[in-house]
Length: 451
Image (cartoon, rainbow, N blue to C red; front, side, top):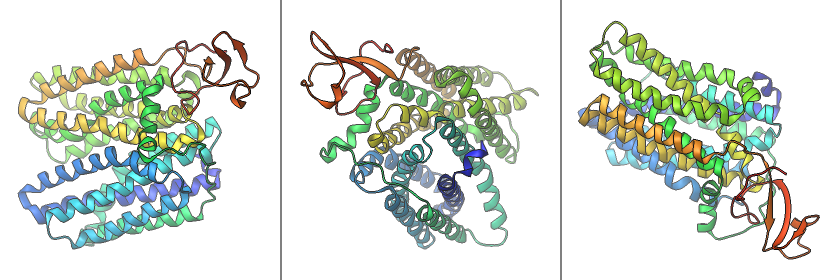
């Protein structure tokens, strides 16, 4: 996996990503302490609202910002987003009111909604070889998982020497370091897209691409399935550990660590697994596994916990981490395969927005239903959602899913460059090529037969 770091440009971009992730992790810890200083016992409500603002910014702004920035080269977009994030981080220590936290968090997440899709769309151009790109995706997933484990530990160590306000300074330094590495990387601007529609059309282009492509529609369902399990872990771990099992607070990080360990181990194995089996053969079973884990959790939670309950929880959380890695890591491969080069930024922005929409649905289910109806009811509801999503994904994603599809153009005139060499049929021009939704292909062929 690490062999991909021999590529100089990717190495600098990956390092920029890691530094920014650590900075973000420090912000998460510092923000919780800041909220407690401002709101006291209402700190949980403040943080919950801040997370909701984060998700709303991700879901609503990513496609719009991508549409506004579609003609800009990637370097100034990435650097500008990092500079905005660094500026916001520097401002957080000076807030004195809750509303100021909300405003700054919205600005911070708007910048992240700009940076992440642009970064994701850049990597396939930097690493055009499928094997290298797969390794990069696994390495990126590994970075996210290690950040979840490393940043809280780093923050805890730093807080023995400094006050939490200085963590925001570390965050700003991380974003500035990310910006400098992006500036030093050799990045080529993509070829400009041939289409130049209005803002609304550009903002919705990626969503229309997703809804018109069978494998991407299935990807949304798969994301919903994995979000059901992930939300259970992120929202309800403390309730399972402290209230249901009656264990110490110090066991909460162990449970979250098991989740991260399952994801990390899977990310390390994925490049070889994908080379042998392919995306569909791994992602669909992972979705059904996530649903099964949730339904089993609902049943187990109804029973009185015994000596078996704690090891079973750790194993279940590790399995949740594995299923999330199996589904989220290959996502970039599916998006790259399903979009024209000029539409990659738009497609990744849509994936970023729509995937966070899934989490925006499952987070409240895990939290509100767990608090009002109990943990078994929450697990049962989320398991039902995950099972329905897995069944939908299996139906939406055809088993024969070739890149090269035979199709007929009925609206293109003789002499159009795209149908050069095509076979004339009764109602148009018949030919085959690697098929994606674009200006010349608005619908998926009724029969997905390879030529």
